[in-house]
Length: 183
Image (cartoon, rainbow, N blue to C red; front, side, top):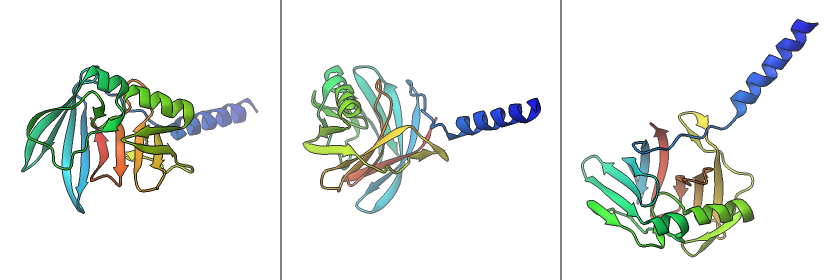
């Protein structure tokens, strides 16, 4: 009888572990292998976290086009209210304003989302989508919040990480990005 009970406990624990969502570790040097979609065309995009505390710096590279960096101020990282409108990034360093971010939402916006289950960003009201569509990276479900704009035209999947709320996937933006792998 003890063997049966221990076997059942082991099975339940292994299922619970298997069912848990993964939370990728983000640190300086983390590479995000992505697909970017612009006007119906897909191309590979590599994003690299160069600095993850204010000021935040995210490098980008597209084969055949070039590379550059988006630089966000400490104030933007803490309290920005909009995404940078980028359909084709400029080569070299792009310094964003205190009110805009690239590839992340501000910590204040994430806190609002966690507390109120809704937020306003780039002048659009978002709410948590229910039921949410799961976000997977490398075949594993990621701990992310799926939000949708009031008009239903824009969707974002945001990593549940209050210290670095990375946008893992977007749909409906001029340039949509889907993170496929984190290294």
